Structures are given as C-alpha cells and as structure tokens.
Length: 110
Image (cartoon, rainbow, N blue to C red):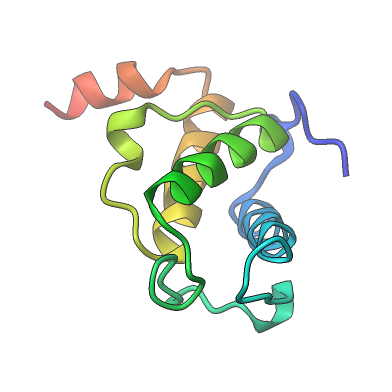
C-alpha cells in the first residue's frame, strides 16, 4: 500500500489500520510475533510486544516514512501503547490535512 503524500486521504480509521499493520509487520522480526488482527490498542510496546527504546524510535520512523507524516521527536516521547501511536499519527494526519504543521498547532495551544 503506497501512502506517500496521501495524508490528505488518511482518515482516523485508515491511520489506525495502517499503524496496526506496520506494527504487525515489524513484530514478525521480533520474538513476540503478532498479526494485525491480534493486536489491541491497549497493547504495551514494551511489555506486550517485547520492544525496547530503540525499537520504539525505529517504529515511529517507519510509520512516518510509510504514511508520509512527520511527527516531532518531543511528541513521540513517552509513547508506550499502540493507542498512543495511533492517536499521535491521527492528530498529525489531521493537522497535515488542514495545511498546518505540528509546530504551528502546538504554538496555538501554548
């Protein structure tokens, strides 16, 4: 599924499905192999999926590249659950659809 520059078409459900597929694809390389249908939004990347800090960063980078959506590193800190990743990318996709950068959106809320 080619998704570069398609963030305008990424609704929240599409983002969630894409994130789950990417996580499942990456879990094949890990000890705790999981199919996308077996993943739960409440799954913890570290405890349930056996990821470490480096795995988390690589996962975020992979999702950014596949979805064509950049997130600031400061926003990805503290992510533990799949739901955290989904929410982060759903919000970033909406901001991109609206033609605003994540930084512009953050500065409005400060």
